[in-house]
Length: 417
Ligand code: GDP
Ligand code: IMO
Ligand code: MG
Image 1: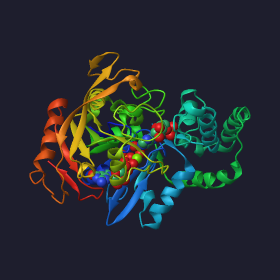
Image 2 (image 1 turned 90 degrees about the vertical axis):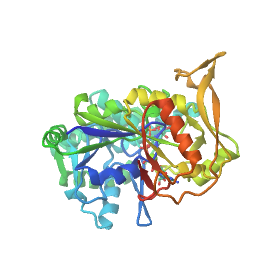
Image 3 (image 1 turned 180 degrees about the vertical axis):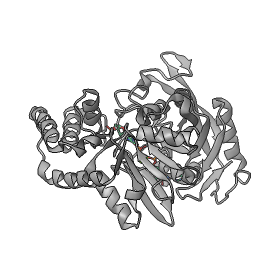
Image 4 (image 1 turned 90 degrees about the horizontal axis):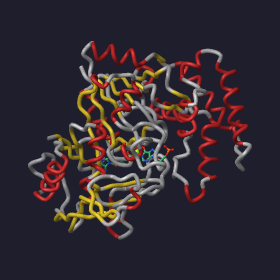
């Protein structure tokens, strides 16, 4: 079998958690390949909302094994909180989760460094979730990070060596924090990690694929936050694109099957950085209110704007998307007119590509008639003609079939064509 990859095509929060949960019954294994607790993936079923940060979104379904791959960074403190919550809901996490021995660990001082660096940036701040993501990936690439496998031997010594390095750096910043308070639960988290299955998951995933098992790789963040191809420096510190599934799980490009690209019917962004179609008017406010656009991890208000097809096509190209899933179409139910940015005005000409200085483009829009009705329908055929027209336009422009339309946060509000 080949592994399918599901990832965000915009600036994150496209609805990855919801769709992974919907698709999990078709898969044996759900595997996260990058990012860490900066992610917040929301699932809604039986009238309850669940938010996952590090744990893959297949955890609520029977039978699926959930893998946290080598490309992920794990904060034991936050991980323990997640596991405790799931355990309280009757989920036997230990029997359903496998951790890569090569995944890196977020230390309390990584979090402190993240915060100190952000504070020092003043008005150039990235808008990081301050979960320690950047400093942890920095240590990984600099070759002095701590990995999950390290907790099994000589851990205390390695930990204090890294911590002391960080404390030296922190001395240069006007930043103080109560490390002891955080460390207590953090070490409880380490003990929890020690009790779970820790494996060379790259070997396991390849063996399972060869044995005919199905794997869905779950992305975090979105393509426009990718450290290479996003709106640098306003990005996260990992490869959020489909290639990240290969490095983050140890599978070859030949092992990748479908690439599912998720996008909202409009756009959101949380944190700083360019956002060509951002709205500052009543339409943007409606998207924020109706779409409940507040961060699942930090609670911050998400910036909102029209769908950006230029950026979407770029994301489709980078990822090799084979199927598009469109989310939150219901949020546009009340609009008379809906806009899609199809080109940019840039330095006196019209362009249809994403330049490196995205902050210098002005969007050029095409307008579509709104459908002005609620969407209780459950089949594609029942959808209003205006939505079908919107979808046909996107399919024609991108050349990729749009196979899922999501009309609400709940599992059942999902139309699969
Ligand atoms: P993720 O990070 O990609 O998993 O997305 P988030 O969970 O951070 O944000 C998506 C938000 O939209 C969550 O609150 C979901 O419950 C909600 N959501 C997902 N799909 C839909 C949809 O089709 N309609 C509406 N109204 N909300 C949705
Ligand atoms: P999910 O998986 C939306 C954004 C932050 C900030 C930038 C860098 O839920 O889609 P970081 O903490 O990684 O140093 O922050 O990236 N960001 C996200 N935005 N959804 C996410 O994840 C995000 N993870 C990081 O707001 O702008
Ligand atoms: Mg999210």
